[in-house]
Image (cartoon, rainbow, N blue to C red; front, side, top):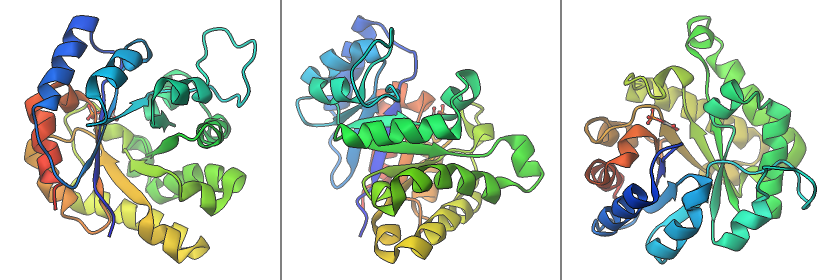
Length: 249
Ligand code: PEP
């Protein structure tokens, strides 16, 4: 049985004041049987780690691809994130791939740097609208998965969470239907099963792309959807709590 996970990606939002308020509101909601993770901006990580005092996990939205400390101005090492109290890190989010030119190879390096530091990488995979319309969804997500498998093997994937995030659904208000999402989650799980059936059974694959409280329950009811990666709606504590409750079993 896979324990559901619901994650909130706060992206580049919030001031010290609004982040403090958001954390206080989140702490008031009680959810049972669901792993909850928040991904604040780097500069807010330390205060959020202190404030959530173990009730939530905290992750970073990025980490450096280099495994060792060094002269990489502006970068933050996965080891530094772990040292701060982070447990997770997003890798391969489509905004990083598209806006910051992170290639499959760079994503794989970041994934391995995260694992090396003891963090759980949340590997984001997903196709653009053009790729879906030209029936390349399967090819794209399997290519993105293979980039990590080739470097780390299936044992690396076993220590991660996968997030299927169709690019056309992120921040657009367009959610994949539960059937569309399930079909891709199944493809990913079947690809893993060819390498290792037990890993395929245990690894969590969450869905992301305009998840709201109203759409969450139907998505999370699908057999291969183990929770959500939530952007916009995670900035509203009540909405996020409702999405987490939808994942309760
Ligand atoms: C995301 O940024 O990962 C995301 C899924 O955003 P949104 O929920 O706003 O579509």
